[in-house]
Image (cartoon, rainbow, N blue to C red):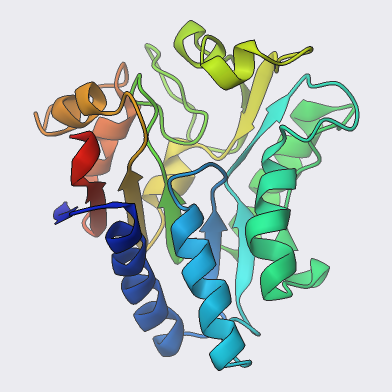
Length: 236
């Protein structure tokens, strides 16, 4: 792992953009795994700003969505889809034929995940995988467990995730997750892990132990040869 300690969120985001921009310049049609949430949002804003100066930026980029909440009420705006559409897909003009996603309101989550897994086998591996880290060490919605799924799957949500303030405030909170598996994440050519936001200090300290265990899924990233960890120093 390559650890980058940045003074604040903006500098962390700019560092992430430098890394991503260099990769896209080398391979304009690379497969980019987009994650929802606040941690990578600054990176996406930098990418959108770059495209305003360089209209050709990201015109060939292929995108796959990392994960999705399941069990939300129809039309809920809490979905990963709503988040990444607003911050990434629409502003960058990513056309549907270049975007592999899963419907948060699917009637058959298992079949939808199986389709995502099959399409990833056909179009992958991911070139750049964007990740955040959960307070319990989850990556995507791969929660702490005795064993972890390698491929895209329906997963049970941990109590620590369900007790997050934003989730607890929902009228109808999610009841399960649909997520890229750890095998697909670790098959990515490059991983960028953002560590920012409240409550991440303990998770970061656990990550530094270099102890690989499924009860702390982020620790499996030690098995990957090309991980950049971008840290907002204010939270650690």
